[in-house]
Amino acid sequence: MARKILFLFLFCCSVFGSGFTMEQFKWPAGVSFLKFLSDNEIPSSLYYDLSPEDQELTTEIAAEASCEVLKDEDGKIDQILIPISDELQIQIFKDAKNKYKIDFTPIAYNESTYTLGVTIENSPYIDINAATGNGFLANAFMLMFNKSVNFKNLRKGDQIALYYTQRDRLGQPFGQPQIISGMIEENGKSNYLYYFDSKYYDERGKMNEKFLFKLPIPGARVTSKFTPKRFHPVLKIYRAHLGTDYGAKKGTPIKAVGDGRVSFVGKKGGYGNTLEIQHVGGYKSLYAHLSKFAKGIKNGARIKQGEIVAYVGNTGLASGPHLHLGLYKNNKAMDFQKVVYTAKENIETKEKVLFQKFVKEQNQKLQKAIGGHNNPAKFVQFDNFIEL
Image 1: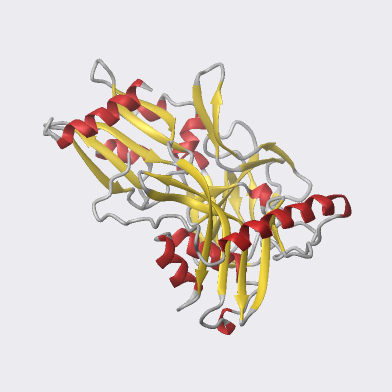
Image 2: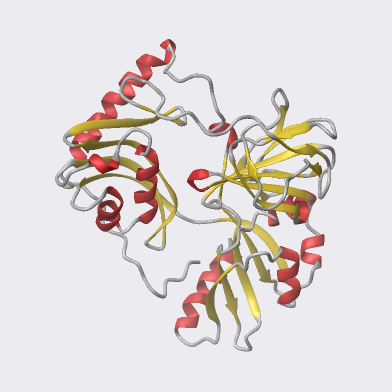
């Protein structure tokens, strides 16, 4: 906490000419954490002294991630913040002895719920973005309704209503919003969707989408679940696991979780032999610690769901053979177990009462949203915006 306070204090002091300056930069594509340390004359021991789990986490830094660096009056790096998820970041800083240290710290943000009402003038994306200044929300809405509404049939004057949560940081939208319920008129006809039990359903309780993804090793047990941020009560440090681990013998075939195209094949830091497949809708799946790749797997290769793409191994920082499966949407890690395909397409009988109550509550919120009288304040974009 003291380091965070000092970081904010130094930023404020820089405004008044203390000599410290804050710069924002994008994480360079193809650059590993270890190479970044070397390029910036920071001791590589910071990496090698980390636990295997934390070394693996440094592999999660996404290309083009927005990072901040604080420099002293001589242009030397004093502190760096590097996000690895919406919840956690790597903090490199100098201690009282002027030695570099490393820590994993939570990212501070606010989270609020909002209602939004929009009258269509141009298109849902343009109109939602114009009303909120939030392109993330506009994009999430389009993906939410893309399988249940023909956007070409919309007409000027049709209504949109949303109830959603959004994180914000220093007055800007941060991360992906979660739309809890939504309504859009299609040529005067109302279409509703509700986020219930981690999936979207229409008002009758029918699942809106058949999820894209299937298990990579059917029958394999989960040995480590997705954990975006967890404070270790004994070690007093933050830990995270941005994927799902499946235990299996070395050489066990691994199947592609969905249709797509190979976007990376090779070694990747603590993940060892790694395969990445790009899917529709901004999704990407990652398969790590592989013993070998299947025949024909190369960059650009088209992949079908269920096709064998690799084999279980323990390359990289793996204590034993297993598959580390990562799932990302727009380069943000997400929990694969929440979106894996399920045969259930309708709300089960025992859940219907809860679902119907949920629908009634959400419809009341959506009704109040229509007309835009309770819309949130619009986010204002700043050309020189700097995050802390």
